[in-house]
Length: 433
Ligand code: ATP
Ligand code: MG
Image (cartoon, rainbow, N blue to C red):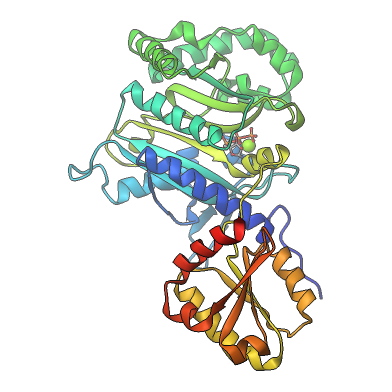
């Protein structure tokens, strides 16, 4: 009997988790600057939360959900995206109450599950970094949140990014536009793809989003939603553009970009990479304003704005540019032990050094010193502390800075009783000259 992981799910081994931890820590620093706080919601929720929150006609709900009935016959789904769960939590925990500072700014970094055909950059378990802002309809929130997304990418030195924006107006606008779009598409019905034919009356805006070549040609001439915006939405969109310009953030407008879900309104955006190695125009972040969603999920009418970054794609971007990922848990000291007698001193020494806050590994297998030094090198240790019979007798330890290969001798007493971190700084300076 042999076991394999479920198709489309990942194992993250240490070389991967180092990258992921580094990326997460780094992103969290940027999120802190913007004062976003982390929330963690369950990995599974009631199926209906997603069918309501994401929309029945979306691909996610109609084709990609991992849903099942549990032993209590509850209809459950593994979350396909993060927003619905965070909104559910916002409503259930009454976070709209007056005791909470508005707007609330939340983020999550979490696995998502979609039953899709696995391929490069497309998994059945994948991960998103998402943010949600509740309680502000100020266009400055739209722009600040988009700026945050751009900042996260820029902080990794990612170039060739493109911010694409559009406005979907309000519900009234979309009703009128929806009809105009149907009127435009109907004469082309026979030429539309099968998916688009199905969507034409259910959710015609999604036809704009089609990846089918013929659909794209038809849609290129379609009426623009921007011509249907009311005064308020027009002003909002103008303000968003003005603030983006104030921040020197370049953007493009794509009036065919949609979200396909009824609750989205006004500003929507995507960040695409134009990295030629990566396949041009791949979306790495998508989001927008969803002033209707909290109410849809049973809370009071509350403006919202959010985005999701696909982390697998971020990792791929960084790997493609040969990003130099620093070791998250870098090794400070490797203890080389020579002779079985040193075992006890080595376990004590490692313990003392760790208590002082240093990252320490030691030899356990009593291998030849040359092998141990090789290991220290491979593990990228900063120092090698060597403990042999000689050192034991004298009560000393040999300290080598691997970067320069220079060595010195310390008394074991000094190491265990003094401030070893401070000594090491002095030693580092002396061994560097
Ligand atoms: P696509 O059109 O590529 O299927 P989507 O519209 O389904 O994307 P969203 O639901 O907006 O994507 O999710 C936001 C981001 O999450 C995407 O831009 C992508 O980077 C990432 N993403 C979505 N689905 C997957 C998946 N199955 N595997 C890996 N990343 C994914
Ligand atoms: Mg998809």
